[in-house]
Image (cartoon, helix red, strand yellow):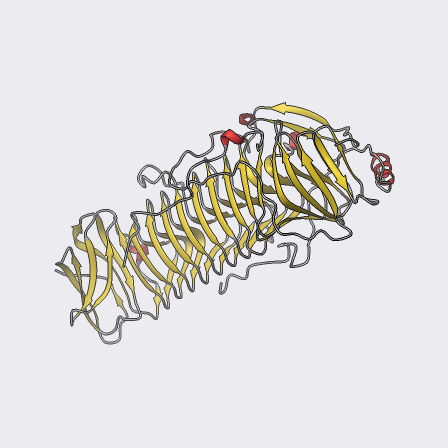
Length: 544
């Protein structure tokens, strides 16, 4: 065993003032379901003052989408350091915090303590500008040096108070769990992260009911190095940063401003339980779990300069790099993609209100709302409203079995590079280059969808379908702003939507379709008619 680390562990057995070297390692752990997302593998078949308070977003909490309408003393550290401007690192500040006014909120000027009963074994820490006061320490290895609170023992720690330049640093054994109860904490940092988990099995951040907690980091970083990692690792690299698994839980409120790069960055697995209220404004990514992200609830307002709202990008393991969203309310105003998984992205519930890109919808195709790089996007449920400069949904394989969608896209509405399965769900695509596009095959077996496109491609046509579907190039262009409707032979309206741009193609599938003739109208005038003849469920032309 490394002598330095053995000596550190020996000292940690005492409750006196400690001297230790910081340590860390990448996480490869698999935790229990309550604490880690490691075990999940998507099947795909169904499926007063922070240090930078002036940089925090201010304004009233609001958002709406238009254009997508339809019907202390003690421990010191021997760690070295290196100072770097953020632009020198790939995760660094290549842009700035978003100035978009589509999504804004007011950051409180002070924290608020919530309802929390401290147990007999909990260590209490009162945070102040003058330092940290530690109570009920027992035999726990916790101490302060300078502006940093060092935690080196597993256990429960309840923190409250304000410090404009401070840091909570966790370094424990790789089999240990630390729970930090943030019961009204406001902390900034002038050199890097206010919360930095160097080493642990997992860390839980609990937000008690009624608590308000506010964190902000530096705009340029002094990275640390020790016997376990070097400054070349750029550690830390986010306002709340952990090299190992983290669970965010509780029903309190958390404000995070990532002035350097990311807001919350977990190098392993990020799990969100309960119903926290989370506001993140970051230069780069708002929430990142490199190994995985699982969200089981909460209310999220996520804003980025040129990064993603939620990202998981582990490319080295096929069982990592995935995102799974079970529930929650998400408002996302992003400079890049909204939800971006390298592997599978699965949505089993939740409400999403997304602006991906600057809203012009005609200058870039790089901003996507839901993206998987090498695997699939699966929707089983959820309510989705999207304005995106690029594709709204983009992956090698896309499978939609449920959910309600309202989409305005600068590029394609739904693009599957290989396979697209429409098994259910309801959707209106009011603006797109092509509403539905696949690189190989399109299977339609259910759902009710209307897609309006600026162009036509033969790859929009289903290659297999058991549901009545119509896809065709229109005989004449429909102007932007016109109400587009489809009516049956008796004049009963099946669909109605407002075109978000000039359209020349249409995709529609509906459980209301049956054998017979249907007509397309624009601004009340007949455009063309199409028919489903006996024995066929696919219409590929619409005649005037």
